[in-house]
Image (cartoon, rainbow, N blue to C red; front, side):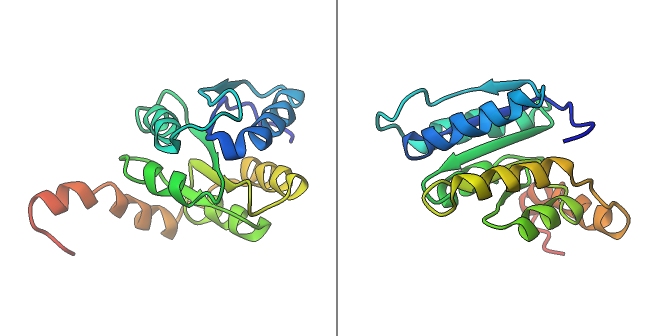
Length: 158
């Protein structure tokens, strides 16, 4: 992963604890700083607690990118995308991971530990980190994301 130096915040629930530890080691082996916000064992926890931690740190700008993991990735995606300036993408294949960066500038990668294997997960992480945002027409579309909350408050729909 040449040139990737952006620190990553990572969090998971108990179902994805083992995969989170493998991803963390993978990143650290490549000299990427990782802030692990939990969970710290396979003891049962509530996934929203960790999704909130990661998404709030990305939303606030403390981190530009994060990784979230749970059993399917669905719950973490739902939690993370409640935050402004968060574009969390649940990816189970390389193409989705690459396109989530190229066209959607995703800033949180979400993985389902019970859905994908460890080796595929590491390849997805690598592809997601290395793929740049294309910008251009995609930037115009993403700017509409920033107006969703404001438009909803004022009754605007388009």
